[in-house]
Structures are given as C-alpha cells and as structure tokens.
Image 1 (tube, rainbow, N blue to C red):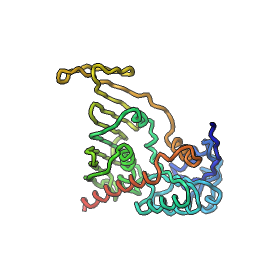
Image 2 (cartoon, helix red, strand yellow):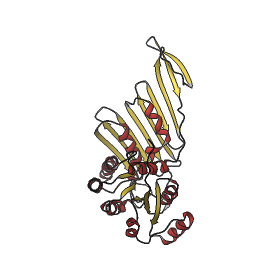
Image 3 (cartoon, one colour):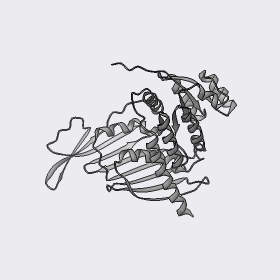
Image 4 (cartoon, helix red, strand yellow):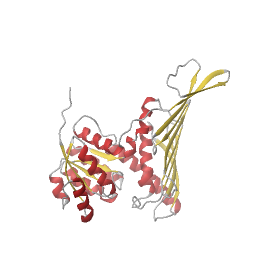
Length: 331
C-alpha cells in the first residue's frame, strides 16, 4: 500500500549557521512546505530570504499561526519558551539539542506535547550518522565503551559548557546503546578558554557492569569523534567524523565467514580460532536532512522520532549531572 503523504506547513525559528541548513533542507523534502522563517537579525534574515526565496516573518507569532510544525534553531536558553508557545498552539516541534536548559523544563514540554497530541523531536544529529548503522547487525553486550569528541575552539556553542555542547551527543548515543540503568558516575574537567568547562571526562558505570569512559574537549588541535566498543569476542571502532566502521571478531575454526577482509589464525588453549576483520560498507546521506525527514514521517504517522523528548531528556539529565559534578569538584 502506498503512503499518503500529507504536506506539512513548517517554519524555522532561528536562521543562524545551523538554521540556514534547516531552511535549505526543508525546501528539498517532499513532505514539507516551508512557509517561512523568523530571525531577529534583520541583515542575516534578508540574506537567507533572498538566497532561498523564503519569506521572513517579522514576528514569531505571525509565523506559527501559518504552520503545522516549527523547527527551533535558537540558543538553548530560548528553547523552552519558544517550544512551549508552539506546543500550546498544537504545533509539532523539532528542537535542536539540548532540548532545554533544565530537566524540569524538558518534562513540562513532554507533558504538554502529550496533552496537545503533538510530536517533539530533538536534533541529536549523531544518531543519524551512517557509521552507526552497522551496529544493527551485531549483538552488542559491551563490557567497556570509550568515546572521544574533541574539537578546535569555535565561539559557536560556548554559551553552554562543553558537556552540554559536545558530550551530550555521545551521552545520547551511549544511553541508546545501553539497555541498563546507571549505577555511578565519576567526572572531572577544567576551564581553559571560557568561563565554563572546556574539557570534561566522565566515567559511567551501569548496573549491568558495563563501564563507559567519555571525553569531550573544545580546545583540541584537531577534530576527533570516535567510539570504541569492547566485549567478549568483539571489538568495534567507529570514526563518526570520516564515516568509518571497523569490526574485529573472534570466531571458532568451524564457523563460516564469507565477507571477511582479513582472517588471522591463532591458537588459544589448544583451540583454533580466527580474528576476523570486517569493514561494513556505509550508506552515504546527509544526517541533518535524514533527521528532518524522520520528523516529517513521524508527523505523517509513518515512523517515530529517532530521538524523542524522553530520550533527549535522559541525555540532558545525565549531562547536567556530569557538569554539576565537575563544577562542585572545581569549587
């Protein structure tokens, strides 16, 4: 049976660096009819309007009256107020991460969205990274996970600590991978270039025994976005930046492996085993466009948000706990 696609009138609030990409992609997605955008920077707004032939609305209220859904791409401290107004008006919302500044605000938006019957999707874009897709083909029971996200200094994002700006991406991925509650958290970090935390490390122990070590920095010389997963007979390394997933498996001598790129024999306690190296072929697509398409499909009832309000709230809560722990340690 063919899908019946309903055209969704959508607007964008905030047309800065990331907001411009929202405007561009929304114009190309069949399910969306982009009504316009609102931004308080008149010069930037005029440029976006001319470049993409999209109407600039002078006020936010005028825009939401014409829309079924709103994409919120504004500073974090405004997410709650804008999101609340949209949801109160029964508009579906896509909110760039983090969902809000506080867990209480996130809970209020989630409850209101449930009451109004609308969708909240949150822009944790890394969940759409093609390098993560091959994980679906493996049974994951990690014993240890190591995640690094390092980046050179950029003034964008420094309105929030590095934990809420960068590490929250990896905390969201970690919580998605782990089907277990958190047992304990250790965290430390320092401020170098800004008044907030610029480098942070957290060691998270889950109740099932898994340990995760997560590091984020915004004062690195080079960009690094890597995940390493260790478990019995399996090691997976993922480079989210360049789009590379490599899998090392240990298999018994009598197992068949058709797609192995490298096969190294070794004897262990008299048993012949093989180290198998696999390099899954990755799909190529734009992650931001993919998550906006997921938003459209969710509104039309074909799918559910990959990162809904509840998932975003969990990542936010963990990030806030880690950041608070670091701040307390520094004082």
